Image (tube, rainbow, N blue to C red; front, side):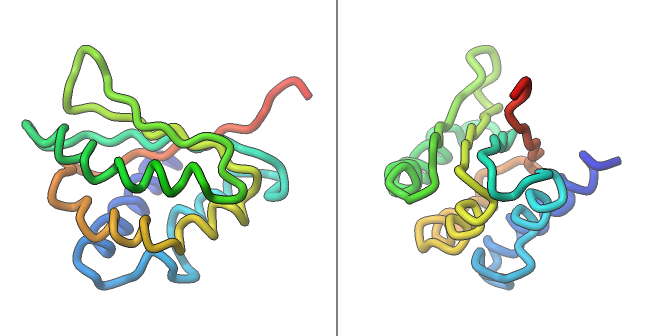
Length: 140
């Protein structure tokens, strides 16, 4: 059930961003809200993995859209890691691996111009709603 809610929230974010209806910096950003609901201690580091499927033949387009975003995001205070990964067996499947110092760092990230630009164009290449999962460090 939780996965379905996250997928719906993310689809709403992608559609809103691609249509210009809602900016990535809105206070009720569904990804930030999902992080707040999923991460017990918002001041501790966490990992977010976004699974995206692109339309057939749109892999390069996604990679081109992501390239400036990756470079800018890696320079953000609070970003520990930010990587785009492609499935070697299925060229339509991608994972964005994100590691953040805190939920506040993710919230700041979602308000940046490079994310707003990415979200405004992402709807043209994705095949459906992304799936977002959150992880926290175990064993500490």
